[in-house]
Amino acid sequence: MHTVVERELELKLVLSPERSIPVPARLAYHTADPYAVHITFHVGSENPVRWTFARELLVEGVFRPCGDGDVRVWPTKSGGRSVVLMGLNSPEGDALLEASSSAVSAWLERILRVVPPGTEQERLGPVIDKGLRQLLAPSRTDESPETGTADATGV
Image (cartoon, rainbow, N blue to C red; front, side, top):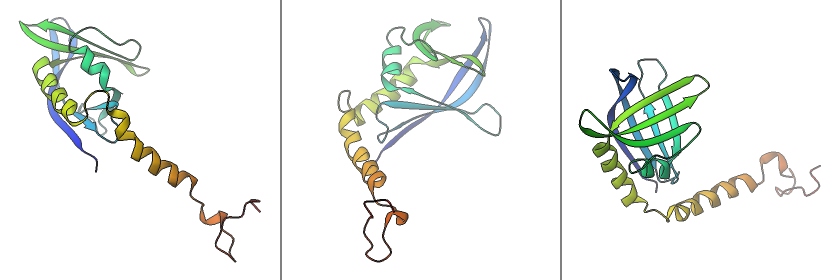
């Protein structure tokens, strides 16, 4: 059985030091994908924007600057309150998003209770085994019509 831990959250898209706009988002964690976190941004278009990155990057980013490349996360203060900033870079553009540190931390605490750090690999074992069984199972085209067994020659 796989567990999904979600949280609806309003982030701020930082346009300039003086201006930001609210962006509804959903944080999601799937035990079937234990190393990743997923963020879906509802930006008023028909298709939401989805980002997936390392769970550890978000956990560490609540405490200290981390990441390089496409995703960077770091804590800071904004208007006297603690926030987490996420810098996202893609070929389509860059975005700087601000989230409440307490909201992100509370969600992280929930997912870290579900899958404690260092136990992620245990969650992957059954998923990998099932995937390998499906991948290695003979397909109908590999079966001999007379015996119903796989033809080792491939003919």
